[in-house]
Image (tube, rainbow, N blue to C red; front, side):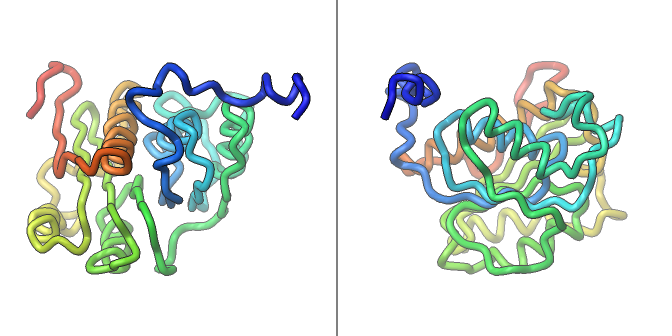
Length: 220
């Protein structure tokens, strides 16, 4: 490798005692909106190389303030803009799939960053009891309320707990989806999701359910 090529490689010395990229597994991110875009950027900066992202939407002006996208990305498919962003910032080329997830088989680690309970249920139907999936992370953001689940889909206690929080969108009390509001809520949810992944991969630990009202800086 030439000297110029070496300068393009990320130096992970600052995170050495926190997370080593060698422990990473392939990951699928479902949804590339306000939370999903930050999740993918963070994963690429952590050194994760095998990232697949599903999303069929294009970027509109209201998507930009809470997400990782910029003005120059307007009109692009979210996954294509995200592929360019990750490549530019980390050298990682994600597998960008410009359509919504429709029930394909999932494996390894899975993160849901979707905006409806119906979409979330479709993912859960494939994940629940799936021995190929080591962890399912579900991010939910409503205004400044952040809720992140990290579920072992083959652990009966995890499954029972998570399913308690599955309900039709019209019955939602807090409407914990579809109300993405502000960038520090999106980045907070993305950060907690990534922290769960790195801790599980390297140390075998995760937080089943993290909740926080970001405005008050208090854990719920």
